[in-house]
Image 1 (cartoon, rainbow, N blue to C red):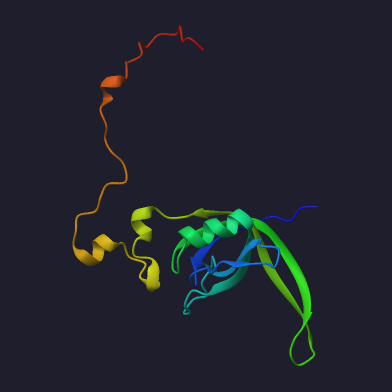
Image 2 (image 1 turned 45 degrees about the vertical axis):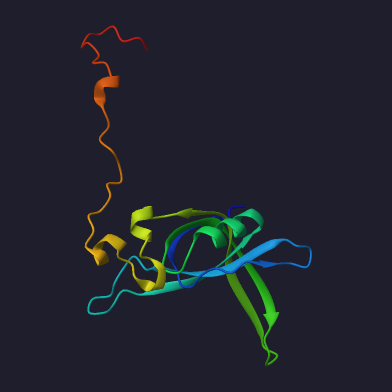
Amino acid sequence: MLNVAVLMGRLVADPELRHTPNDVSVTSFTIAVDRSYVKSGADRQADFIDVVAWRSTADFVCRYFHKGQLVAVQGSIQTRTYTDKDGNKRKAFEVVADNVHFAESKRDSVGAQGNNYHSKTETTNEQPVPAYTSGDTGDFEEMPLDDDLPF
């Protein structure tokens, strides 16, 4: 059997760390995932998907992720049934996260809190810091163009 879910979306709220009676870390959070198509004349729709993370993954999520941040979640889909307050049987679907990853550069996520998806440099008129350095190519040696390659 195969049960794999891979999602990328934005956190709709800051994750909060909780603990079970046996002191196991757990967090539940929701991500907004844009649909890949748009009906003509309509706005893009999003699905709001519930995610649960346990133990060290929960600790990691609560420590490093915040509302509005773009995250990638890898895990499996889990269903559970329960009875609501009116006595109706309900079924819940959620993703149990095995891994949660940063899905945008640190520079882009600086302004992600509070639904401000623009980088901090855009709002303060500062010059953006490059995401890479050009470095010195003096450490590299040019290879001769011949057919005697060492591999």
